Image 1 (cartoon, rainbow over the protein chains, first blue to last red):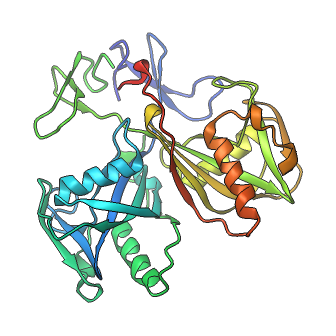
Image 2: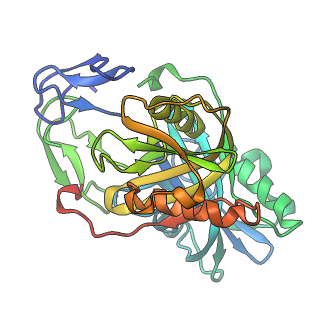
Length: 184
Length: 184
């Protein structure tokens, strides 16, 4: 951030009075520009004994398999976001069962939230951001070609919980070194 | 948003190519400025059979009782945010038990996340954003003076779940009309 989105003048990083961390503050109108983590909403779509995965057409991790998920939009519930991403990436209609996994990723200031969901039928296909969309049984999951740790962990929890048919919502932190470009 | 935080020129609201909703886009450098919901992290601090509440010193809802909670910061886990807010608002040290309630509030583009937590001792006091901090047993909860529906609902769930000592994490949507000033 270099300029104030409110008045167009330059901003400086300072600790505002009564605050305890540096913020971008406008040199002219003194507006404080807070920056906060973003939420990624997604589904774990289930059909019979299989899980739906999408092969990513875009970076990061193009060519790797993921659960349908994406940035939550303003004025959207987390479930609406999860369903929208599942439609956009897999042209799939799902019904939500329950919140399943929540991941905190402080190094990239993201919070992931996945919901267990039931695929209505086998009518699905690759959306614009996917190269392929497929159903995988547990034995066929491409564990070495999964896009992100949050995908691996959600799938592991699911197959583990499926043994007892008990799917508690889980919160997990994925800690990685802070990338220099991502500081503020 | 009126100006580009990247180059300082004016922005316009347009639907970028390949997108399906209006964004602020710089007229000069064409940077797309996404706006996304924010996460509020908080604790439900328990001491023996009592719950800790803070009387808000600041708007919105100054003078009403709340659980300690506030905006999650960049490069912070959700638990770190919840513990920090509990220290800041109540000068209280807590240990987290588990994720408890998640609320989606699309009209204000917020996602609340409360964790059940144990107060280590009765050493707590009002922080800068609180007028008072007190422990309340179920019979003494000031139900008509609670600050927000997410507080009321989290407390109701807690006292209900306490009967069975089973505290599943819950996701809930609180739907209200969109305020005109809050559109984008």
